[in-house]
Length: 403
Image 1: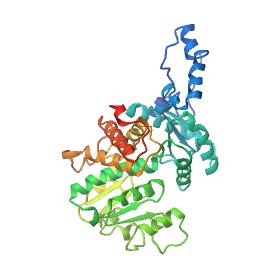
Image 2: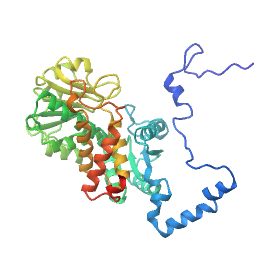
Image 3: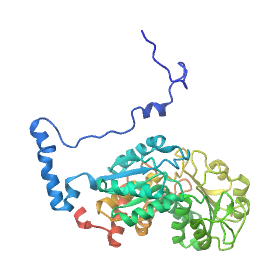
Image 4: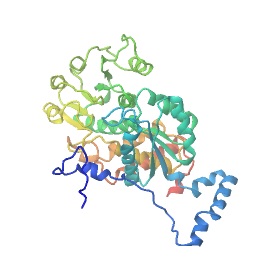
């Protein structure tokens, strides 16, 4: 009898990590939607019957929408350069995350998604490759691509393609933060115009959150990167950070968290760094702290909760989880349903507003945003996004056809 091999990192006495067990052979598979019971079925699903479907599309290209899977399928694309809290781990190591994203699409919005991990880093190569893949899909979800390349990649793809292109690390985060902050301001009795926000992190999420929150007409937003506050007098700023310097930090504050958080109403952490407890303690009374880094928040929620009125994290083991799954399934569901040509700013704002409204009269310090398994979320967000797409003239399917 041959003894079962034990992985080198695991002794025979140690149970296997349940996360590793779950991932064996991957988290997803392809299933046929038609039966193949014999030659007749085969002749319809494949040759010669399939030729008639292809000929129909060649004759009327619009028929691709009702004769293929395209309208309900999204490509989840990464280069593996900025994966979760792991950083630049490459395309192969990113594949479990992309599979996970595809599983979330299916479970929360009944959307089929295909994980695609590309072994290239050049912006032109990535854009060209994704453009060539696009005819098979109804939308492109960009995932875990490092800044600043992610900004150029998304912009160029939006210019070239007539299907939704959405970088979830940017916009999914921004939509959920907007919703949660809307309710946190309501709970603490703040008016946006009197509110000063500090965003810790100037990567993809930080930039997108800042840009979206600017539509709230807040009193001021100060953005921090690893060198401190971004301000107009700072040299050697990238084009994206230079734009932030010109549109934020009205008081031209300088320094790190200890300097810019004094008297601030809101801290939004999307940096993966650490914010000293002492810096949080000098914020305004009844402050709002969203410490969203995973797995370790910028400031532990129990520490933040000593002085803050509302605390949110990116983790599921604390209240107020700022989870992108509250946004991207419904956003893509709504966009695909009306065959939107892109995702507009109004569609994102509609998603955020719908998400915030779901909390309603149940608003409480531990409930400023719905939970990930709230079955109302994806349909409500999808409907709001579809309505906004129609209002923006981006819908190619009449809303009445969905009723």
